[in-house]
Length: 317
Image (cartoon, rainbow, N blue to C red; front, side, top):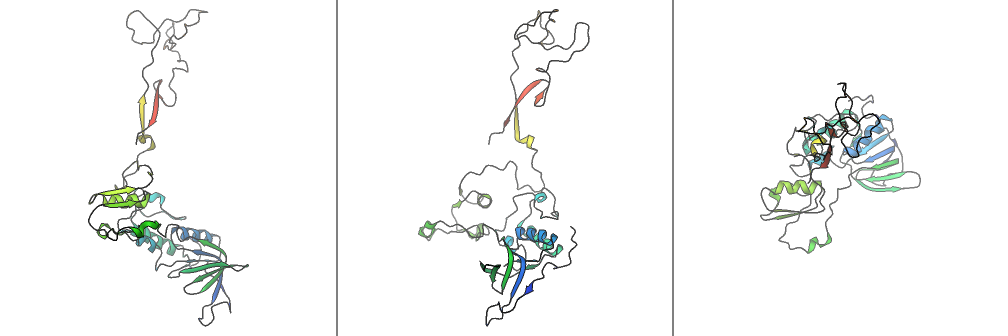
């Protein structure tokens, strides 16, 4: 990774006067762009802004970059191999077909922000966003900041979706969200229902299934074609996910006296003589012994083996 910027060079705001909150000593700053959220999306946006040399700042409510990953359940691993997990301008420091843990990815985000000297302000919680007709106004727990552009990147799934009838369930049923769940020890003994068959729901259900009866409710999202719990093993080539079935042998209409070595051998039509309809026209040698090319209808082409067609079907689920 290479970066020609000086550390924190992008963070060059112009401070205003009289625009803060009276009696609290909170001054106002102005940036060209403010990025709300210091996760992977916010850091990637910061990388591109730094390359354009635009004055900007990244606001993150967590003490460190990537801490939002550290608050997830303990066994969480990324659902994509490491070769696809890198942010712009870098490579992920792990074997390409490994699946990083939450801690490993969070540490990567810290290193990414430090390497490119991205102006991240931690422990800054955005409490309001408005537009005064000239610029955007961001209210935080520390100060007021103005900007010509705002990128909102705190994550779209931060707030759990709890159905309204959840409060009507028996208090003996312990309810957790994917945000509050950490490990199987959080649950009381007995069966469990996981609502939602997305990545998070399927991963949590997979962890719970060996120790208790587990029900997974939700739209069927498909099946993973290879086991992700085997780190370091690449997925199979797409051809291996297909099943090949040979077409039945064609019924040739050619006839010969005695069993020929070639089931399609037949006499060569005489001069001016048209072959019989439906007769096999495959031949390998002419009358003078020279080799002939077979007609296009019998030659091998892509998707065939030795001139015999094969039907390719997807493997059944």
